[in-house]
Length: 292
Image (cartoon, rainbow, N blue to C red; front, side, top):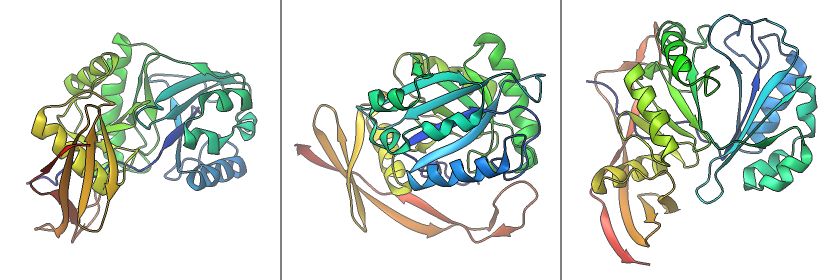
């Protein structure tokens, strides 16, 4: 029996991605053709600002040292969800980015800090292909990225580690920050098409990076309960030690019990790793809270 997917997405209020072709090591920010000192610095700064930093490259063959680097910046919070993109001649120019403004979802402030960026209306899909981090990501992810990019050029990118490589192939949709596991071409195509409608796909949904792990579990539980697929229709508005409160844009509210349990038998963390006693999160029966 597979481990449940809800509650396994990474946690980040925003994302910063920079195009860096060539080989990626297990710790890609410092093990790639990106300057390792800069990679370590920008990765640490993003973590401090509650952002996810990663490298991307287009599927297929590409020069290891491009003349320019594509950049994506995303804010994932409902009501402040946006995507910016542009190119820079040198990734070192990203030093100018206002990372705290990304965290706050302040689009105009972010653009002012790096004028090379401009709003992008079409969502993009990241597919993890970081084989040095987990070989299954490369073996299973690359064919999907290559096939989908033929149908949606410029909107599908190979990505460094997205977390949860035991669910390979994995993907993240920006700007929403929703993540899926056990990906196949049909699901990847559906996720991108749904995003164009402002919707998500409930199948194999791991969660939205905006929320905590417990918040992800609760939000997905409500989505499944009411069949809600609108990307920005649900928000996690409160958490305590035992419950998570989720609100719909129509002001319906639910309280969702979320518990932790150890799964049996032990599971490996990723391809080729030894099994261990893994803890998972489960949502209980949601309690409607009325109109608030």
